[in-house]
Image (tube, rainbow, N blue to C red; front, side):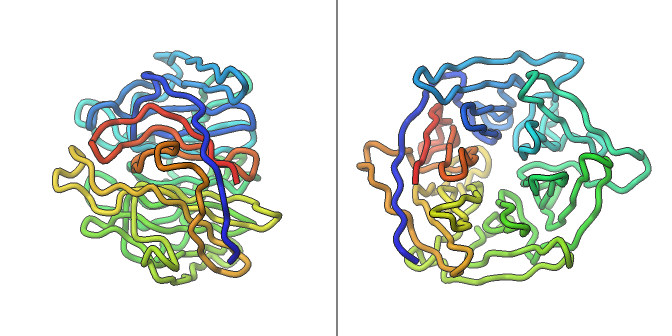
Length: 334
């Protein structure tokens, strides 16, 4: 695979954006920030913060509504579909337990800046259990995919799809073992890709798992996770679908490589690298970043990221190696 180059640009930095274990969704001109924590296991707020991607990079906030907003939470997951940001569960409340909402998703309509609840059409139909540090992705048409994460105890490897029109959950084939939290999924050209994560003992790496919706089957593409021919194992990172030079490309970046002995109270070894996977040739290459070391994001995990315009990545916040929540927002242009 030909070497890919990219350049980082800092867009914004603000105290209100300082957080980790949150989510973002991006359009061509705005980044929406929701959830997360400033201190371990203490949800920061449940407002929606918006950064405009223009010359002013203006920051605004939409206050929550007591009657019609998701409760404050950390470790939720989000997906963008048809102008709306969908989130599912997370951890919150006094006990910081998984937020149980009986299979419902919250949807933030970016056109009217308002939340609504999308509950399953039947109270008795199966639905995924509450969880945190899971992942969501949409097929861009009518399905939201939900995968893995951490319930009250243990970790999951399940896969579900939610039809936003019929409001029905369908349980699909489990992903390859081991169950994990902090994993990443991305939907590209009709396939769902999964990689990385933490199984409770070790960071996962060396495999890219591929789900085929038409057959309800998983397959696995393996690679050497040596940091030379492929990315090293990691969790709480990102996997994003891009089109680079017209080619379908998956990009994984950053993440935690070695967990802290303090668990969620501490910061482990964080990564600052960026890797691109050419779907057609099934080959990885490390992205050559043109910035100097002092002019690029700090290594981090527990951050949020999304795609802008099909060929750019936005990264916001996260946890640095000094165990400090970060307040910045960057764009990576290929």
